[in-house]
Length: 445
Image (cartoon, rainbow, N blue to C red; front, side, top):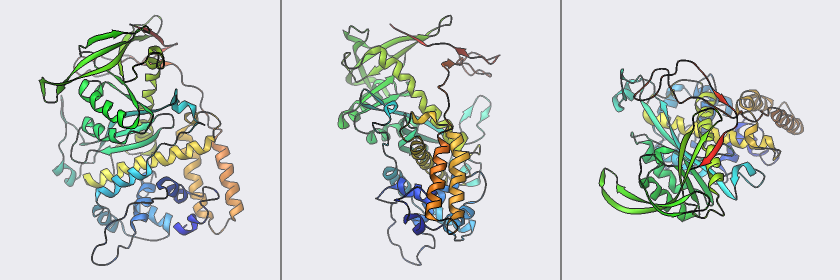
């Protein structure tokens, strides 16, 4: 199946990976490289980026084999390694800026709250393989048992939680922290969004940056604050929340006060009957209780957990290896960027499968990925020239109808103890696996 064959049918119905890839990158297409001296590259950049994205979602096979499957051309694995090494990182960064964008509409009410698009910010780490190139250019973290087994590549993702659709991503190729990567993502916050973030970002220094980013695009934030911060109460509201004032300290110089931040604080106790409760401390830039009730915001914050489920899909269901397969830090960053693009592509396919007939996340990600999407793309590729356009359309229509059968029931309201089997620092030791079921209760403090 060639790119031209796919393009001729893209307007009628989805017909495989390349058609889905074209819809993902949009009319602007992939970035281009400046012209260089010498012979023209044998593999165009458009084919390289598509083949790499297709490659990272496969269980078995080499990049050369998957390139041949897509474009019916051959290129040796050694040539692929050289070609990837010469592609600058800016190409992948620009490709993510072009391809990652909001996709939820009014047909997806679960992706909004009172008209605000729900987005979340969080980070994760990918393990790098122990090649000589990576060992020479990275440092493994220290643990209580010595050096870690693998060096890590930190990645931060801005996520549209209602669809598990990535809106932006940054990758720490030079050892940047999750905090630094998250600050970069604030510049790509969409309009009229409500940003959810966990305790890593729950301090005045980050809240100031988030408030400025939100003001530029007409958005707001809801962040879980750290428990050790001591604010000054300015005003108490009737719904139990309060307007507080927090000192902003210079990073690296905590004794140096650089400003004052005013936010609305919500304190709520969360727990289940018969079990110990714990307190949540939330900061928000939504200052009006009538339009943003405190109890609703406290319950809404639970949707931030969708970001953790997204990382599980990315690291355990799309990627099947414990470590990244690339041999250098730069090519590992390319692999992570391709994984993020795959997740955006699959979020689109999941959205199309639902067709506005219920919440998108009620369709099993793993089942449509393994039982529908990958087999469908393979059959369409093999059927080119053997099946008529009408037959391909009928095949794709039937596949999407099949996807809708993989609806999962609503998740159980359960939680597991915050404990580890081998305790580190003050964490309690987990001796027996257990979970708590029952309705969650919220009590404003």
